[in-house]
Image (cartoon, rainbow, N blue to C red):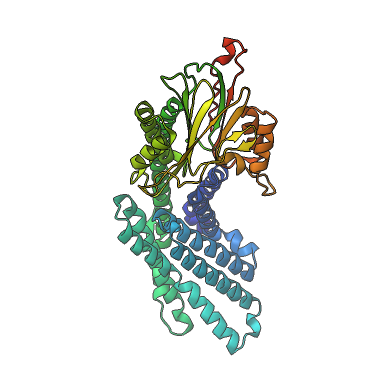
Length: 486
């Protein structure tokens, strides 16, 4: 009874640590990208289970051999999860060399524990070889706390952040204490040293309760880790909220750049659909009326996704608006766009196709590495050219042709042909050509490719030259833009 009374605080703390571990595990299960939660959960659960060794039931209800197996495996989980936790906090989890070293040391640690616990079952028949095996494996996991010192030392040298000092100092003291006690604990096997017994027996005695040095270090590390992880997650959430706000603002700008309504262009029916793969897409299109009564139709794709691609799209659209007034020829527009993008998209590029179409159906078009538009299912014979933003002196030749009444031109981006189903099959060019020949609308083409398996931004724009006898109401622009909500 007196023994249980003295150990009551340790049992209560162990219960608190176990509950904290279970709650942290639930947080990881809710958001499985947060590996920090998983490592913390494993550490806390192992720490709580190790701390429960003070209970008499562990000594009197478990056989000595089973108790040793239990303590060694739980202790290995505790140590390895602490390594992974510190690696994540100090930013080493993204470094391949640190991951390899940790995996190698963890594997050696676990193998040594398995071999060491196996020898316990046959210890009564142990010979010299088994004794040497036990000595080597014991030495391995006795030296493992040194890895904590390496992580902390290199971590502070790499990330000199004041908020990491509390966990660094506590983890350093924890690792150093376990290393010293582990080494000295092997002393009685070969010498008559009793220093380890004195160290482990040292502690605070308050009100009849005894708090050992290891218990104090464990409790301090528990509190510091909880505080550090909670603070890191709070800062991460705040940064994520800021990024989401910036993305929302950029998305609002992109919605302005993606036209929903354009002035009516007599003689044409235009329809489009735009479905980004993420919140911010890299596809773009524009329909710009000209003073002649015709229009410029532009469809393109910027390499990459996200905020960077959206900013390049805004640069392209702004430049297009300027060039359309002074240089309405497709080849000249592409050359102007290329000059504007050189050195401004940091190794990226953009593909683009530009077409000038007049009310009588006469048209001119040029491409910069983009797919040729389909004319009732047949590709226009455009010459290949480099994408925008690669070389300053790129040339973009244009072709001229004349549309016939009720002919349809289909513009599309690579998100259509690169749509991939669960078996890895691509949607492909042939399906797009067949749907174009069959007169499928822009929405039908995009929806079928999206249902097939969307991996990239999808944009489809169709332009039909109406018959002269059709009523004027049919000659208005029909432009439908759908923006994915992510």
